[in-house]
Image 1 (cartoon, rainbow, N blue to C red):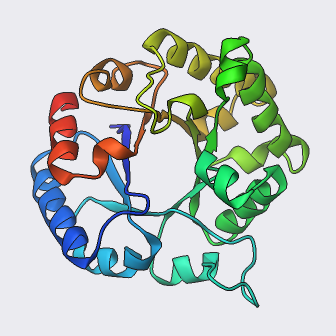
Image 2: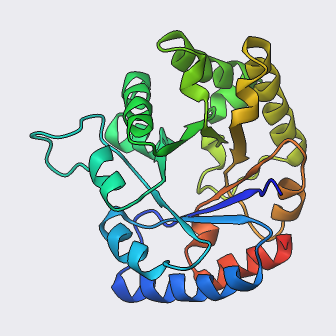
Length: 250
């Protein structure tokens, strides 16, 4: 079965006790419920610990970042080689918080995707519009522009075996919700656009959604045929809340 993907992005939250409790509870849940592919993105400091705990479970780990360099004088960074060394298979790239707080641009994002793929780490590429573009009905145009940049500055294969995460910036951590009609429209448009370039590549791409997902809106979102999964932030930080969400969609 082609399972939908549920990703818990823990961002800058937790400690050793928190991580151990979170994964142990999630392991018990995933042992019983296997309808979805469950991924978690703990703070990078706890990736190695998490890797030890998830053994013999269905849970996969995601890095919240990757550097565009393999090695060298880059204090505070983590390389694709390091992530591969501890068997990390996924990485979030281009998240709006990285763009906002770390000034990452399109070139940085492209280079990180190339590095991730070099080490066989699947990129989760975030795209999305700000509130002004949304209100001016430019959501489709902005998403197309972001995808087109990657293709133009590399080639269509840059998207092969990736996950595209549509995350409208105005709905991330704000409590504002994109309605299902809008989300479905954007996902459908992305599929149509990539298919117009290469109808085979689209079969190698998952398109997921993230942006103020909660217990009230998750059921309709996850059951939409154009949505391959979810990238969940704040609603996943407490394991009890995350389990409640998983039970709703189960």
